Length: 207
Image 1 (cartoon, rainbow, N blue to C red):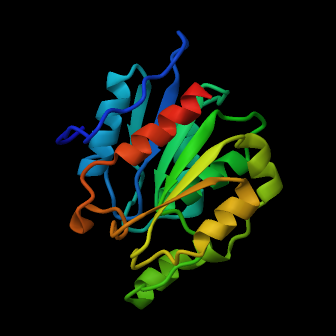
Image 2: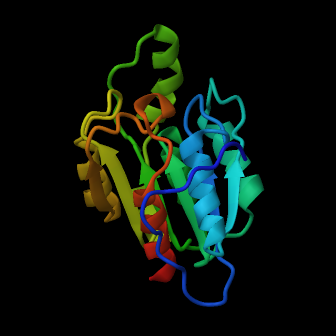
Image 3: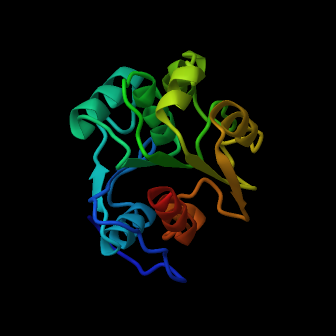
């Protein structure tokens, strides 16, 4: 699962005897070996959760159909003990997956999730992003299957305008957390661990 680092501080402990599953979905161009993802997985496992860090297909050219289908195949049937953590386009994948479900999950933590983007650098990037930006969501269906969520943003994300938080709050009822100077939460931005994500997920799992 790549290098694991110890989060600063102490994550909350989950309660109860039921094994709760967490699926972590990386972002566009990402992988399970990203240090922040590996760290989050490691610390959730230490606290008794069953953690699955997915390797998403064609990560440099993600498509909605392929990524959602992969999530369907990997997750199977969801229930109140199924949780998700997504980064960037992984957040959209979770939402589009939940839109198609007939049962509710336990909750999700979204890191640098977006409905609008800025700062795309090439026509190729714009073409890849276009379907994700233009394909609508059925928020009512998603909210029915997503009883609790936390959306985490950075105040200097070069790609995700901060007003995306208003959509998460208004459409999904997400708790909003804005962190200082974390960029797009990539290793290049210095994001190698996140106590915020750990504790947000464990709060949902304990609710």
